[in-house]
Image (cartoon, rainbow, N blue to C red; front, side, top):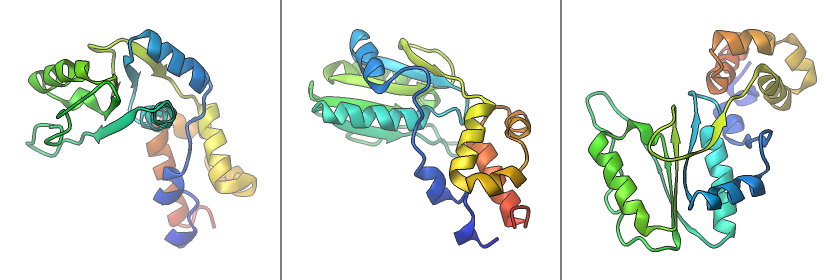
Length: 192
């Protein structure tokens, strides 16, 4: 299968939207307000935290917040850092969204938490509970993986793919990696 025809190509995965199964967006926004707009989305790699953060960010922008977003990555031998100016001139209109905040070192995380008090809110993603109250723990299951596979591949191709339960177990619940694995599977001719 050509990469441009692969239903699991990166552009299609990026277009997927979070499925609200544990709470509605308005319930989560209400819960976030009850936590003084300072909370964490917690879950394992590939559990949907980033997608949920994007969805909640859209809802917060609709409420009039000016979003400042950071997605942290750590390279070999490099400490994670927020971009210069990310925490500058914050007002109550600003809402900070920090994906993968758990990679920040202790000093950088304390600086973020302290500076964010000047903002209207802070939402971070973490792999385990941390210094902020947990807004939601993301726990996807094989049923959700099956739903995503069918959405991306269609029912006919999905029926020929490895079972979602098997993929979920093989990738230890990491939906992102399971879907990337299906890209490779289709690319090797498994989907053709």
